[in-house]
Length: 350
Image 1 (cartoon, one colour):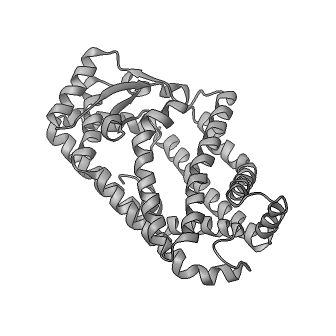
Image 2 (image 1 turned 45 degrees about the vertical axis):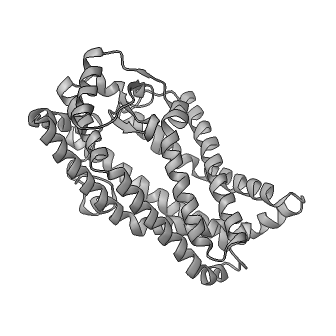
Image 3 (image 1 turned 90 degrees about the vertical axis):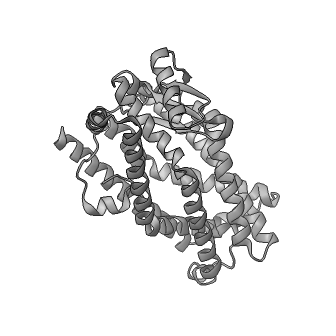
């Protein structure tokens, strides 16, 4: 099993690197060849209103990117998972999920891109205003995700196991966490991996317990993993992550604000207000994400360690915690000793 997990993790790491390099190459080719400018001029010839023009342009480049990335995407998310017996999902269900993801991704991207161009045309210090909007939007999205987004991909129902249900509510009281409800989610239809989450904000706060976890783990093990999730809330990790991500968002847009005058010239673009400049903004996002990945991984590991410590302190279930980690590592084919370089960039506890 350790050898299988190592092989799976190495292939996932390699494919992730290939995907990143491939995405950067596609953007550079699209910008450097003049295709982005050509597409802008071609769409303008139809005389569409400005914001409809942006919507069509975004749709075209996202569709082209999807088609060009499809072989790699299919192998990574479908073929590889079947190769290592981590899913029983049928091809038809996979394609349906792809369609849902594409539509949802386009809607969210369109909102963000339209706000980008609107703010860009209204404010001199656009980077600050845009950062605030994107931060607020991400918080709203996190609040709505459990009731609007997750149900698009999974079915969940209230947990029927009354013993486990009461135990989870008792744990929430013990950890001073206000819990709205506990749901069982049909994870097994898409993956054989196990997981649990305490998600949502305000009235949408809820526990989502994967059936792959509920059916194969003891009550003590389930309690420990949820104590870990509740610990994140108690330690205000979500708020701290929002703060960190807010600073990163501000930093990214300020970087674009200060340097775009130079990078635009490299690709013979006049201003960020051009639709043809949008791939350049995407390029900034990818490169900035690579640079900031070690910081994000470091913060993630710190938070995970703090949550583990609090969960153990509250439950005192050391043996259950150890068995839980062993089971999760085996079931999810987790690499227990990843390469230091991978640990540097991955949100891992290692």
